[in-house]
Length: 268
Ligand SMILES: NC(=O)C1=CN([C@@H]2O[C@H](COP(=O)(O)OP(=O)(O)OC[C@H]3O[C@@H](n4cnc5c(N)ncnc54)[C@H](O)[C@@H]3O)[C@@H](O)[C@H]2O)C=CC1
Ligand SMILES: O=C(O)[C@@H]1CCC=N1
Image (tube, rainbow, N blue to C red; front, side):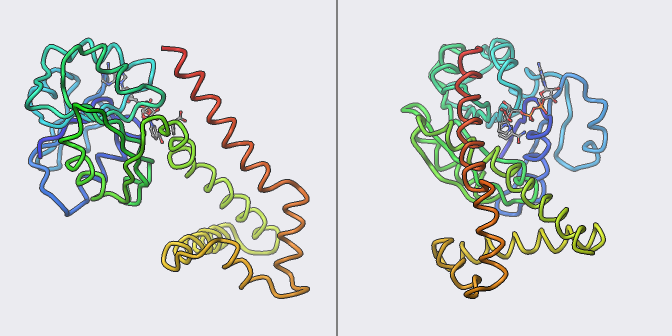
C-alpha cells in the first residue's frame, strides 16, 4: 500500500508509528506531511518513509490519503489537494472530528471514495478502537479501510450519525481512562507506594479489568460481584465513590464532550 498521512501531529504520528510496526500488510511507501517538517528528521531513517511539507506531492505519490489535521485546517487542505485527487485511484480517509463525509465531498466536488474514521492514539501500540463510516462512493473500499485499521487494533463500522458519540467514547475516551489511572496512582502513593510502583500497579489493574471483560464477555457488574466480598473493603470503597458521584461524573463528562463536538461542527 502507498499511504500518505496529511498533517502529522499527535494523531498522525501515532498512526505512522502503528503503520510501521504492524505486520499484517506491506507499506510500500508512507508519506508524512506537516507544514514544518524539522522535527520529523528521525522518520527519514525508516525505509519506505518519505517526509515532505508538500501535501500535493504526498497525494501524487499515494493511493490512500489519511487526513489528520485539525477541523479548522481541513478546508484549506482539501482545496489544496482536490485537483490531484483521482476518483478511481484514491481513497480518502478522514480522522477529522465533527466533519461529515458530505462536508468533505462538497469541497472536493468529485466522487472520490471517502471514509470517515475515528481512531485513538493507542493506534501507536496497535490497540486502537477505530470506528469507520462511509457513504455510497466509499462502500467498495470499506474493506480496505478495515484491513488498515484492523492491523492496529479493533474496528467497528457504524452509521455516520453515531460518529460524534464514537469520538467521545473511543477517542476522547482513552484520556478519561488515563485520568482514572492517574487518580488510582495518586491514591496508591498516599497508601505508601513509590510513584513508579503505584503507576505500574494502577495500569496493570486497569489492563486486567479490561482484558477480563473482553475475554469473558461478561457485564462489568457480574465481575464486580466477584470482587466485592460481603462487608469487605471493595464494596465500602465503591459505595463511597458512588456517593461522591463517580459514575455520574463520567457520564456527565461524556455528554459535555459530545456537546462540544456539536459546537465544533458549527464552527466550520
Ligand atoms: N489527538 C487525538 O487523540 C485524536 C484526534 N483526532 C482528530 O485528528 C485531527 C488531528 O488532531 P491532533 O493530531 O490532535 O492535532 P495536531 O494539532 O497535533 O496535529 C495537526 C497537524 O497538522 C499539521 N498541519 C496544519 N496545517 C497543515 C497543512 N496545511 N499541511 C500539512 N500539515 C498541516 C500541524 O502542523 C500539526 O502537526 C483532528 O481533526 C482531531 O479532531 C481524532 C481522534 C483522536
Ligand atoms: O479532543 C479532540 O477534539 C480530539 C478528538 C478526539 C480526541 N481528540
